[in-house]
Length: 133
Image (cartoon, rainbow, N blue to C red; front, side, top):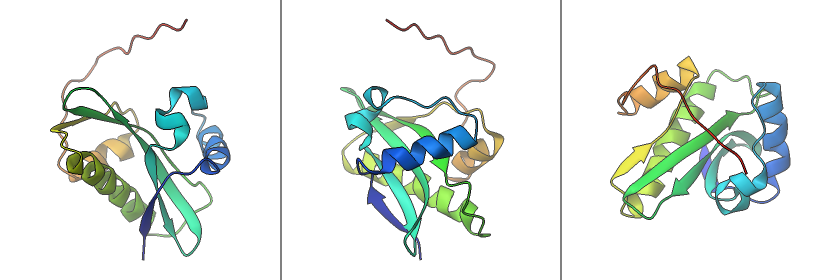
């Protein structure tokens, strides 16, 4: 049914369109791990469904970020594909010896899916602070 594969350079153009559709600021390649290839794509029958990125750190914490889905994929099993993506990203992280996975979420559906996969809320009502140079 669903299959996972590592992100490829050529996926970035599709991901841009998906982020734009959901009105999410498009991260430049230089802000993505391994220039946009350190992550997974879930696909089925030649159709890309959803993707997410893994930031590996020099500690035992890894970070999942920038999960996005194909707005044109309307099958009922779309939510299962997203749950599979979360599990597969976690499996990759665990296989590399990491002990903790961090993510920062705002979307209620994504929060629900992460909770269903065993994640717990670390904190709420926080403010993300960013500075660019």
